[in-house]
Length: 266
Length: 266
Image 1 (cartoon, each protein chain N blue to C red):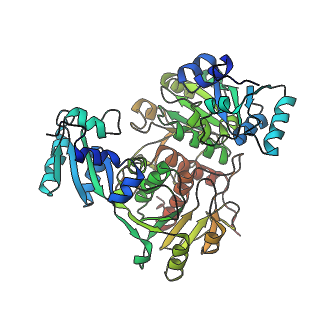
Image 2 (image 1 turned 180 degrees about the horizontal axis):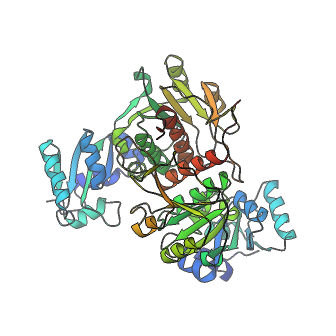
């Protein structure tokens, strides 16, 4: 059992709250039973699992531990002060994991099918994570991150995704790279903007669709708007001039879902 | 010009980041030009406006200052260190305000008409604020906060509302009080739960509707479910078992909006 908070492995785990070290190591930090179960269910590359017997009270937690051991994942037993030194929660459940990032370059992928979201320059990791969560709920395939923005493996994004960080495919591209990629792919890219030609309810979304959203502050840059198959807008009749990014994405994703899986009338 | 960060008025403003002092004083803190303009547009009870000439560079900002002065609002000129001591932003625009809370008891209201959201035990102020933002966008009337939860006047809620904290009516009730109130009012209360009878797309929402959402962690308590006119659910076909609260609320609000204001076919 590790009993020192200055143990080298523990120090490395704490560093994963910084983007710089996530980038250098290619790893990220996951906390909580639900997220770790999702990682195991989806065969995510879990590098190590840290547990604290004193905090891990539920039989459920012990089952997860056994399951990880069977899968050949390295287990690190730590005492309570050590666990609390890595935990980001107020009442930690006593289990966290270090997982290898599953981000790929968009250029390496061809023939993406189904429903995707692309976020350009997204700033808020909570928005990023909750978009993953809704995308999972509508049966989407994955997320494309374009340009500079927050990091999908930020602890807030991971937590907000409620496990969808492990179910959704993740790709990364620069703005130019995305535009080039789009030109060679049999996929519609639908951009969301203010005052576009199409009311989002009136457009017929293709089976293979990338829903493209701009950043919270600046919206979708012109160069990306021009690369879109169509531009859609969400009507608004109040005083605010836009919706929260994740809320807008959810409204659009459910419209696409509703068109593809209409309600059967009784 | 106030040049001391320990000035009594400045200390009182800083205290407004604590719920306790917001409750005691009945005031809240608003930062940024957009939010302050929304406060003025909606005749919110602005108690004082704090500005820092060094930071307030835009002519737009100076116009807002003139407008506040014409409206008889007390102006407090401060230097940069003082402004930075109250500001919650990284790059402050040089203007903030202290506003009186406009929260009313639900029991005092009768005949609420139009579209409302009720949130029971909401925990995350960012969710609360972005629900206000979407509710404004669909032409909603206001928000009812039920039971213990976060505070609508938390700085994160105010910021996330993008000014909708001033356009939406705000009511507060205990769980029992809400149920009693509902029994005497000509309004439908539609609860959102998992696995309810109605797919949310199949229900016909009345003109006077309160959309009732449970908390992020626990969902809607049974006693509130029983008080509902109907329960609806959002279909999900992935791995996650729920949506983010504000995302789910936005999807439901836009379904209601779409039923009330259907797209005119060209």
